[in-house]
Length: 271
Image (cartoon, rainbow, N blue to C red; front, side, top):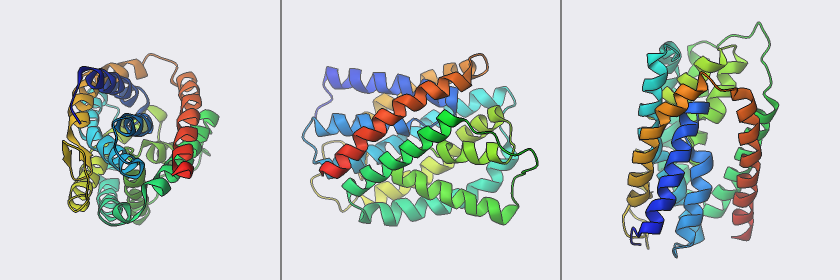
């Protein structure tokens, strides 16, 4: 699969869009990347089942770079709750490795597509409703945060997302301020992505008929183009998060997510 000019343009546009949204809404971009990388790979002859898996893995790999750029921009504004990051990270690493090394390789791409569609639909609904937490609720203790981190890492590995669609609602539910939750979620994206990518590379070593440029389940050409573009644009999204009406933007973005969820459900059922 050659990296022809049209493909570079498609991946660059995707990288710019996901990088900006990563900084603006604290998402890793997987909700956008997975459907579009699936389309791009399917149109270039990759089997549907494999295309979904590689899209999820490649999306996760780009989050390593997006999170670094985004979290630095948030950190400079003092928005990252590093105390929460330290307490959630161990569980995240364990959960991520359990998902990407074991469960991910065993599941069919059609099931992952359906699961992704349902997960994105649920996430979009949560974002659209923008429910507020009860005033008295607080973050749980160490055991509760380890469990929460494990669940965030595990589910993130199955859908190729940076975990923001679980971690941001979880933190706001526990009365962490929304801007702190978004910034902290961006920081959590790094351990989520790193642990899952290690699992995708190892579990994908025995897969047959991988396209040119594949490293395990990771498609390196897409990773390179998207990572560069998203890394450069993410700080602009983080800057905009402190100036734009994020609540309204979330509802607009949720509407787009419904369409992407419908597409992935269609791909899963059709397969």
